[in-house]
Length: 310
Image (cartoon, rainbow, N blue to C red; front, side, top):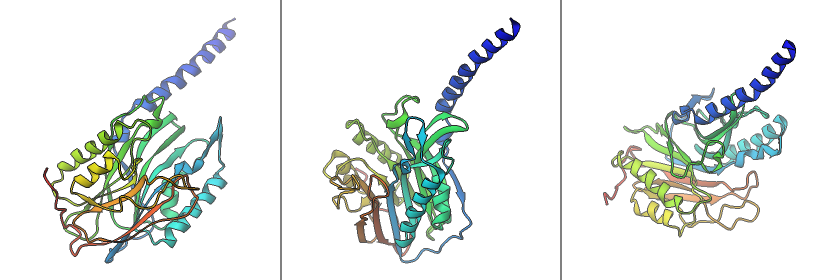
């Protein structure tokens, strides 16, 4: 009888522990601190031109539905293709969204693997969400891979966050600094803005621009999946901020197989020289096509943007 009671108590305790771990994992706030590290590759010396790529990786489609995930071999093969593309394009700064940092059933860190495989010097990462329990969870978010020295700063929560048990609409922005040889590091942000609820889109842009008011005329580079079209209120705000230049109405980037909407972009400091070029690559490694921008650096990479205070 006692043995049966102990077994019953154990069976009742296990679900409670799992639920407690799930809640703790979803509610803890360490995500506010961005993670970063160096690879074995040395830091590059900035040249006259800078090549930047923005790419939503769609998590490598690691989740196959139900309890099924892709195998390690499938994900590493896909990551090797992404790395080959990045190397061929001679990318200096890679801005990733919907990249997987941890997936219990398929234990490959897509950020660190890609940073090593493509020869970047440093990486930074920030969570959108962490879903599951420690040791068996999905962590997905934004990342920045750099051939130059990089310092992670913070992860900014954007409006419209859902409950931790339904995290797919949660949006955050990863902030970092990159040393390009000037007196002041370049401030960079990697993000993926609101997808589903339209009223949140301009609200999130205003949050980001409010964050930048504390930076004065410091140059800022933003890249990622903006999830809005060039004629939207969101992009009127980006243009009207007086901080950025870029190809606001270029070729469509989504969906990858037959793109019809431009939702991915690279926005560079307005005071920098005009862009050398911009391309949307015809590849189907994700459900988005990557955007590649080539820009000239100013004589002094710390050159401040001429920001309209209004």
